[in-house]
Length: 272
Image 1 (cartoon, rainbow, N blue to C red):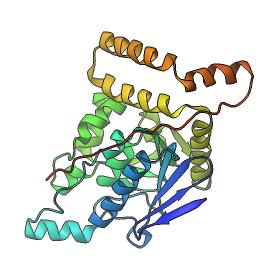
Image 2 (image 1 turned 45 degrees about the horizontal axis):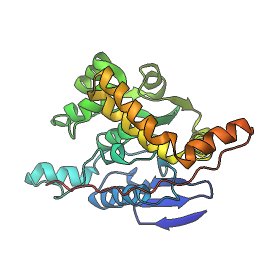
Image 3 (image 1 turned 60 degrees about the vertical axis):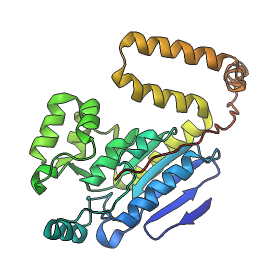
Image 4 (image 1 turned 90 degrees about the vertical axis):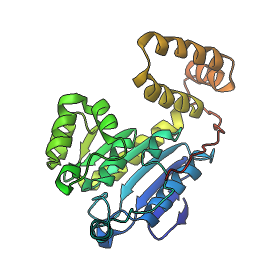
C-alpha cells in the first residue's frame, strides 16, 4: 500500500490497483472547501493519468461523507455576495475520468457532497447514510448540472422529489429509488466497496472499462441506433487487441486474466 496525502484528501493505492481517496476534514464533517476541491479533483486527474490505477473508491473520514460547502465559507459568500473561487474544475469531473469510481458513502451527503456522490459510477451506502440535494432550502438553484445527472439515475418523478423538496432521504429509501446500488452496515461499507473494486481491477480490462464508461455516459444522449453503431465500431477496435485475446484465452484456460494497463491522458479545462 502506497500513500500520498494532502491535508484535506488522503490517497492510498494498493497492490491491486485500487486507489482509495478519503475526504479528510472530520473535524468539520468533511465540509467542502476550495482546498479540498483542488486536492480531490487533482487526485482524480492524477489517477486518470496513472496506468497503475485501475479503480477508484472515494469515502469520507469520520461520520460524514460530505455535507456540502463548509458553512463558514457559505455564510461569508451569502453576506458578501462574493463568489467562492474562480477558474474551478467542473463539479462533474468524476464522470469524465475514464476509470470506474465507487462512492462509499459513510454518512451525510448534501449539496456538493450529494453532487460528488451522484457523479460516481457506483454508490455503496452505509445504513446510517443520508442524502439531500439541499439547494432549495438554501435559496439556491440546482447547481452544476445536478438535475441532469440525478434525473438519469432515478427518473423524473424521483428527481423532482429529491430536488424540489430538498428533503433528507435515508439509505434504505435511496436504495429503493435507485439512487444507491447497495446498503451495508457501517463497519462493512468500506471493506465491501474495496472488495468490489478489487474484483473489477483483477478481472476487467482497463481499456474495456474506459470505453464502457464512455458508452454509458454518451449513450444517454444518443439514439438506440447510434449506440448500436458506436458499439460496433468499438468492437472492431477491440477485436485485434492483446487484452481481447487475453480475455478469451484466460476464459478457455479457466484462470484469472492478466490484462495490460490503459494509458490515456485526461485533460480538463477549468471554468470561470
